[in-house]
Length: 491
Image (cartoon, rainbow, N blue to C red; front, side, top):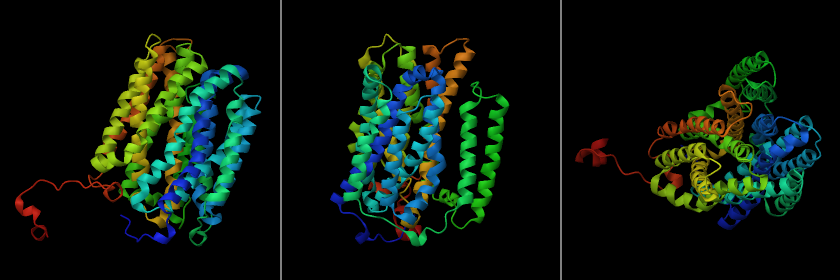
């Protein structure tokens, strides 16, 4: 538990906190808008590039993999050069990458541009979150997280219908060009209104060896997950990626034990709340990462809907997520993190699994209702996970914690897409279908839901009082003999 005193002079006032959170949310908004628009546009891109639609998941995973490789260095760069400076530069790189994506003429060029775009995203989102978390009081963390994520959730709301409109009536290339004005507005807002947060004294030297080993491990392991059994490369090469990735992971673990400031500080997992959120969140994000990939494909290729109609259906989940965000703080105060995370996680899994029952004959209102309610509980769970992760992290270790946590966020979101694509391809082959049927999509939803369900027993291992100083919740004392109510007797 963090017991270090808070420096009120170093924290933002409520109005400054809200303004900073809204500006930082520009980056989250742009990234979320990009992800949901691209997911909606994948079938149109596949047709333009004459590529297999299932292989177009590479356009998503290449970006997310780039994030996972470069995010570990984000905390060091923020401390060394200043959070505002790095954050502003990251928005610029992301915007340039978006332009390159829109100019791509092949799947290979698109993947290369997405990797470059991911370099900007790797610094943009975690550094923006770090900039905010280092500037607020611990008791204001839930409010700060809500203010940060509420505007960002507009991306998934606007993305599907906007992406569907662009693909149907314009060109998929505009799905990337739309990031340009948003990026420019963000750069100006950061310059004018965000103050510098810098900690060069504690930055130390960049752990280049650790960055190489961790990057190799993540790239090789994710390449194995993305390609195994899918005919993209020979099976032996996929297994070789797993083996080499395991060796690189072991090499990083040995390196991190000896290095005074490793790029990914594994000792953070000794903090119970941080470790629980990392592990439970990893299972849950496999489910969350699969949704924006599976749902548009099922609606467009399985149901035969247009991209525009698909977008109007899939945005219901984001509407639910945004609508419930203001209620996160009072619900967490009433239930506490442990109970709330078990409840939110379990219900989110149930409503994601319900997507397996979707059929073309369902009324659109029924589809929207299931997606909206599922979006509510996924949103509440993410607020709880993202807050409890930092509840007991000392301010001096916040940079290392945000880098570590953001890395695992991106790995598991990437894994969600890979698992969804692999499950869909496996069930299609197992059923003997030339193309995925609606039932095959249903099995894929059930598989990712089962993985997401593993997060619930992990959340159950939290202490009932975990994060009470952040949420304001106070668990009732345990039942017992009357003598137990006497502090002197307990001592």
